[in-house]
Image (tube, rainbow, N blue to C red; front, side, top):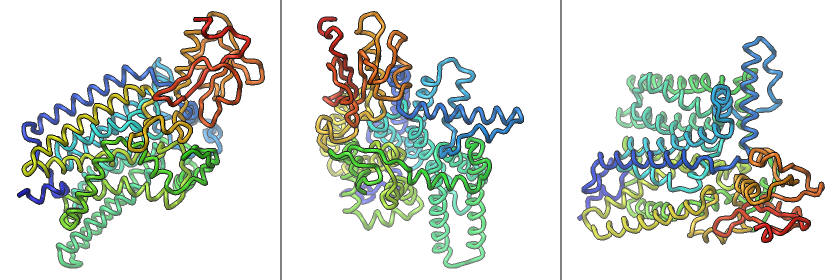
Length: 547
């Protein structure tokens, strides 16, 4: 009969798979990261500029100018924009790197985004190792790498991927710090404060971690109260000690934040909270394509983020998470006790890092758009929970039903290979992925946002330059100028749509491609989903004649 502890991995680290010890998994993790890093560096030039990058470049340059003017003794506040709700750790780092490196803002931004993406996966791996050993760590990393919506954004997203990296590493150091309670070490407290501060310097929403710190403190004090049987002098000493360390985390975090956000220097105790209020109810009223309807962002239904998770998480992860929920329900009493043990409570914190932000944006009716882009930071803890469910299934079948274990391993292998094939077919637009359980890729045409970042403009521009004969041409583009100017050579002159262009480039989002008539000569598409179209005016020779 199977030991009941196999059914709930919250109680400990669990067993390694027979024939593959911790060293095997450590090596597998190393190989995984090396392969993805090599692939990422090789494929990085394939990813086009995204819609927001220009604004992030501007933000970084403004912050850099602020410090240049400040060091010269000038009025630095005068060079800042009237409002700046975004801290500048990523943006200012790119601007500083651009001062000394010859690669340009685009390459530096994409390279740093890739580094942040790899760091986020490393954070998930570190949490797996901390809570379950090398085996769990490997599956945490693999599951996150195999989540296309996360993987695709790693190469160009200047806001959400860096923030996801900061959030998962803040979670890791919180778990390490929590293990020491009610007697935290000064070094652990300072480290946690620094990491949370760097996360705040990426996006002010990192303030949520102060709540997580308070929750962990409350758990430790209540547990000591129960174990110590009352409000003893020892308990009050722990209360003062832990409270002091928690306050120190807060102070250190804000000290780390301040240099990266010049806009708050005039009032650092008030402006961060004003910015948090602004970004949590972002004043954007644009149209969002959802379930076949174009809806203004503030009017989107409450289940908008839940729907996007359901249709974009990889099939294997959804199935494993569902199996994990069933395991939890079947062994609810045992797992409930394990959750509030010193080894089990960290998983409660991991689950909270996923569930609380999701519940918060739903309850607050926050303005969301572009799918789950704003919630990418909840995917790493979700991958960790999926990995926990997977190793729990493996442990459950380890002795009683070995044939079932073989079937599970074979099924996951098949699903993973299918996922790799899909990623290959989508490249470099992996982030537009939709799962098969939600109807597949082709089913989403005209019903949900697809290539909303505009990175496919690069492929359209390269096609235009390669296949259009030598000569000068007039090109109209239904997109900001920076999305094409960086790729089109001088022989293509950008004009307005009403100035008789020879070619028209447009994303298909919100039917922008219907703004001008013309003969469609090229479509950037994957799995039947059109992203960007190239049209030519009738007075030009037909594309077939040119070929």
